[in-house]
Amino acid sequence: MASIRFLGAVGTVTGSRHLLELEGKNYLIDCGLFQGLKANRLKNWEPFPIDPARIDQVLITHAHIDHTGYLPRLVKNGFAGEIHATHPTVDLIKILLPDSAHLQEEDARWANKKKFSRHSPALPLYTGADSEKVFPLLRGHHYGEDIFLEKDIRLKYKNAGHILGSSFLDIKRLDGPQSRKIVFSGDFGHPGRPILRDPAQIYNVDYLILESTYGNRLHPKSEPEQYITRIINESAQRGGVLVVPAFSVGRTQTLLYTIRKLEEEKKIPELDIFIDSPMAIKALEVYKKHVNELNLEARKMFLQGTEIFKPKYLKICTTVEESKAINTVKKNAVIISASGMMTGGRILHHMAERLPDRKNTVLFIGYQAEGTRGRAILEGRKNVKIHGQKVPVKAHIEEISGFSGHGDYLEMLAWLSAFNKPPKKTFLVHGETEAVRAMAGHIREQLGWEVVIPEEGKVYPLDF
Image (cartoon, rainbow, N blue to C red; front, side, top):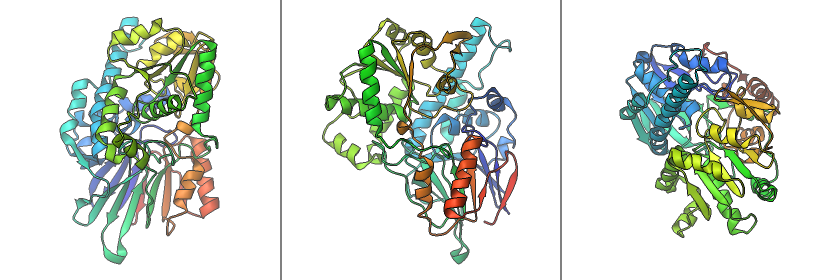
């Protein structure tokens, strides 16, 4: 008997957790934090739907916190099995989880200091010590390597093109003509971007679990470089500061690569570029360590000695004092800081400082989930709450979806159209309700496949 149960990322883009049962064993595919709406965030504090001690192994698609951020809590509550991922993902997890713990501890301390939490004392979901207990369980793998979950059940990681180390999970029962394959997309990458390879093509899929973040959206036809050129030049002309909330892994590296390139081509002025995210700084070193996983152009530039992530006046801010010192900069600068959806981290302090000034610009380059401050600003909110205080939104607000790490619905349809046979079922997850419904409609109309929009917690039997 085989089945799948969706424990998260249903009707939302966060909290990816899918429980796959094969031959009486439980495999958890991703183990992410819920973010955004309060109703979602509260799920992080609820007892896990299955006793963590009953989970045999965890299989991770990529390192982002909405796919890995619950791991310390899972281990704390009794999980003791192996956690499988690609080698770059393992390295990134060792950066992201302690950072996630630090942010939660800082938020709890701030809430206790300012007394704006309903809980006394406010507590973090987990601590830095909890996050480090995950590390001995991590097992790194190469793309294409055969990993046997059982003697007749094989797992392969295939490049998803979303961030460094991101993967499709290809799980196959090896049974000759009766073989079966389940594929989990994780987050499907945006083809044609700098630095990363395009998503790998997959065939012979019997069950597909597909993300649908951009199920109702298309990326603009214009290259994102054109947008970033205009936005940086206009910001400089206004005499303000450009602030970019950016995910420390993925978007930050792409943005630095693009700014350096535009400077080299004399399309933008050479400004002070502040990277104010300790995690992003560490992630840069992971990207350099795994150059072999980048696309051909990026590898060629590395071999030629080009520092592809280094604009001319790049300034790395590691300490709190260096971060605070950025407040003295009033013009001709770009601040790149995490988190990308403004759910926590140093970006909140920069937003509190910069949002009230009309000369400044805030640029969103990644998806903003429902219930996040980033989404509220994009929807035109006149003020946002930061650390218990209302902050007026007067700065110029810009958005570039072309920097997103997610493929849009046409890019995903193009990938699906190369399948040599329709899956028995395609389950759509990791998208807000409208996006999921739209993606289901596209697949049904264009390909004629059976599509399931799953319910959270419901068990779906699989012929596997």
